[in-house]
Length: 203
Image (tube, rainbow, N blue to C red; front, side, top):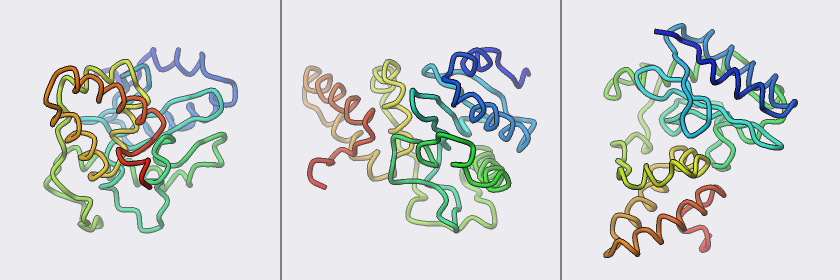
């Protein structure tokens, strides 16, 4: 299987100049961490897979983001991962390589993410169980399809905590009519793209 995807080369080439060294560095670190990881493009962004999504990166006008698909399940004793600013991946808004933790820290997180994908029931010995370790929520197919046109919203949804995801999914699935469901999905996409939780108005 080909581990590199030429579409990611094109993505990096079209990115803002400040973003290119960041994206190239992240790409190199991911492949250094594991030769089994493959590249692909999803929702117009570069993704890195191993038996499921491990992590992904993206470039915007003024920052980059790099996020793990299962951030809340990663063992992070030094509190390096960002769970607060959902719109900017697992490490906040990146404007230079210096905004990232040391390479060995990134590689450790990548190894953890790979193990989680290989067997969700068996955690690494060093990973302690926490309240965040719960059954994975299923996002309805119709909502997944709807969010194909809202890649940042989809990215943020998957980086939210278990309870934050559940609030959105229940709100949408409990709609009584198709019209109400569609309206809620539109609103959810707008709020998610901005990194807002379901009840952001009350916080």
